[in-house]
Amino acid sequence: MHGLVDTAIDIKAKYDAKCGAPSTGFPKVFFKYFYINTATGEKSAEMLVSAVLSNG
Image (cartoon, rainbow, N blue to C red; front, side):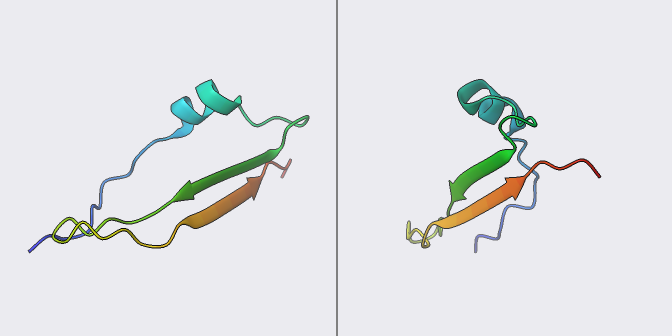
């Protein structure tokens, strides 16, 4: 039986290289992710995450 991956995945360096680092001029970050059932290969619906850089 397969379980969830519980290892953190650091995507910041790749995101920054592709889209630029968040800054006051570009404070929003968006990315999509999904889960894959490794036993069946089924993919979940895409999830969308957004975040806004703020001071404080």
